[in-house]
Image 1 (tube, rainbow, N blue to C red):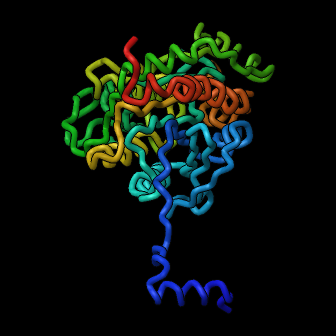
Image 2 (cartoon, rainbow, N blue to C red):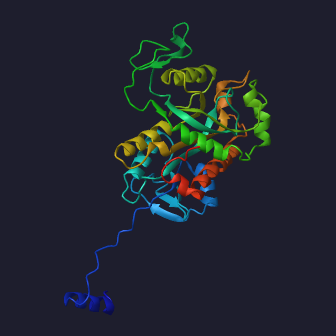
Image 3 (cartoon, rainbow, N blue to C red):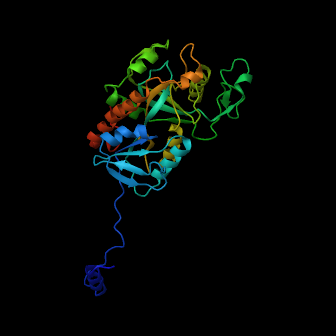
Length: 342
């Protein structure tokens, strides 16, 4: 039922005494200063609980499980994509193309957990990536039938064998992130106190590598993406070789995860349309497990082991990511127009 006041207002408008209101008042697009990208609920939990991300913005096309962008008054926002390539690419594409957002000056922080090469770090460590390499865009033959000299059965598509660098056919095989941003993020976070656990401490003692035996630390290395979770010395060494091959030796493979090349591809499509700046994209991955077994351990047992690293990794990706996010938010005048010169 229409109210008396609404009827009166309509009459006055009809008489030309009151200007007609627009059919709807569109809110200005939300312009996040820092947008954290998590992949599942545990990665998102610390941000949601501790950063007062109470403003919810429904975005069409996000995961049904995580349909909202969550923001606070500081300009910090969080989106959770759901896990895997398809979910990551779909959710980020929906975000990029939403008319509810202005992402032109946004810094994107991909922040999640990962596996780690014991030669490069230990469980609980948090690593900023310079390169993201797609580990899945390979031909693969039966590992039991690989020719002599091959580490495993994967090799470049349309190449003739292991170790031959393929031509890029997809455009998403390798992303080289802004080195200035990587260095700035590391500088902002290198002194963060990291969480650990007794279980993680006991588990890492099984490994021979010095990096694996050490305490969690913040570092810089590179990440390999893939929907398939690989495990074992041969497969992990093959991924090491693959990352180095595609980057002419520049990438130092350290962490393994499912989503990052898919997320970067969706973001890069948006950047080509002028919606965002790829120089403002950072990847932070904290290690919840090792990517290979310790001596004498079966790969399947390693893959299913309780290494004690899950909660330290969840807490550390937040602590380290927060240090970077706070640096940007607290010094927005310095960061608004790009990464400050060192």
